[in-house]
Amino acid sequence: MEFPWYSVVVPLIVFLFFLHNCLFTIFNTSNKKLPPSPRKLPIIGNLYQLGLHPHRSLYKLSKKYGPVMLLHLGSKPVLVASSVDAARDILKTHDLVWSTRPKSSIADGLLYGSKGVAFSNYSEYWRQVRSVIVLHLLSNKRVQSFRDIREEEVSNMIDEIRKRSTSSSNSVIDMRDVLSCMTNNIINRVTIGRTYNEGESGRAVKALLEDLLALLGTFNIGEYIPWLKWLNKINGLDNRVKKVAKDLDAFLDSVIEERVVRNKKAENSTGEAKDFVDVLLEIQNGNETGFPLQRDSLKAILLDSFIAGVDSIYTTLEWIMIELLRNPRAMEKLQNEVRGLVQGKAEITEDDLGNMLYLKAVIKESLRLNPPFPIPVPRESMEDVKLLDYNIPAKTQVLVNIWAIGRDPLSWDEPEEYRPERFLNSDIDFRGLNFELIPFGAGRRGCPGIPFAIVIIELTLARLVNKFNFALPQGIKKEDLDMSECTGISIRRKLPLLAVATPCSV
Image (cartoon, rainbow, N blue to C red):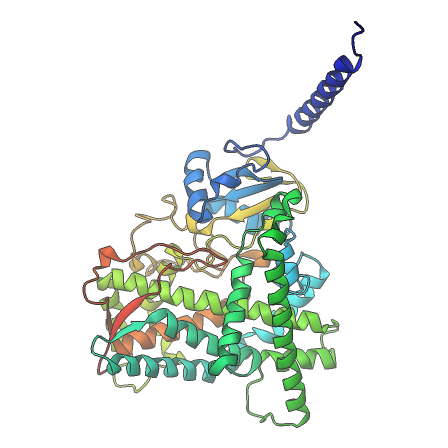
């Protein structure tokens, strides 16, 4: 019987191909020291180790593999940094190398090809858009011009809490509801000049923005295992992105057209603060920046404002109230400071905030333990780079686990304890210069809206603890408070915070 030639040749070819790949890999990595990696599975790599809450899962892995580790999420190499030194190297020393974003089909679909500042690739276009935002939308002068809006909406929230607290015997308030409503109102008025609270249209706009945030926080398997992109058609993700993008576009078109008509009629009073739409239309029409601001870019910038503003502000405020209710001593100390400083005044204004040192410490401590974005949007290396003692190839994604950094015992004494006092004699701040505390990121891709967000958080917190005494509902002990987290682009408590608000005379 004749021996079939292919039974020898085919296995030989397969073996030679395998040998070539092995030798090629060894040759290319023998002189490169890569970070330690957990064991990976075929095809999916380390995806199975992310869990529902990646900031927690990656923190546990870092305890075993170190503060710098290399994962393979499907076909993508992903670096995870969980220490101050690693964060500083990425966000400061080699900030330029790590300044671009990996491609996201969801962000592209929702944000006009990622034409805003948050998800855009690092390029001349990104630099121009960021310059527009920093100089024309979030400058100190512009932020100050919205002071009346902030103070009015915080007062409206205080009135709403007082009304709810006196309308029933138990005085239980859904704090997430009132905080998110207030934040939405401020962001809407600052961004598009009006609120969307009432009736069916108001509910539709709120639901649309919630869908936007939910989709941006959705894990897309096709980004990491490209040949599984077809699953997004089966599970409906592609259709959801298209529908939300279409509805967002129609909403923003109506906002812009409404403003164009209003401006033609010269209905703006000269003393009224210009909202973001007004400013962006002036830039577009006058081209005073030398940068051609297209309509899609204008709309993407507006959506960036909603994404970065609404979720982060009210989520931070809710976490602060949760921590204060779990730590009554800190609540009492904060109330004593605020009420002592404003004694005799009818209302707290932004001018009073500078002397509230314990209030600022409370905010920092809450952001340390509960950053609204525990793992910010990934970055990607644009070239080979040295990170601490490791060689990192180009096109490697990086996740900076700021949630883990906030719990690093090398930086914090008793890191799991809530102790605002740790910041009273400390120069550590959250504006991107101290890498022990970077809840809003740092470097070129750090959040440009920190001053805008913080003044809202400070004013809201000061007025809340000044006007009300807060307690957990009857029968709920602070030890029993469910601290389970939801999933998404930002991380908040799974259940909304319910609290008893008792008006006090001050």
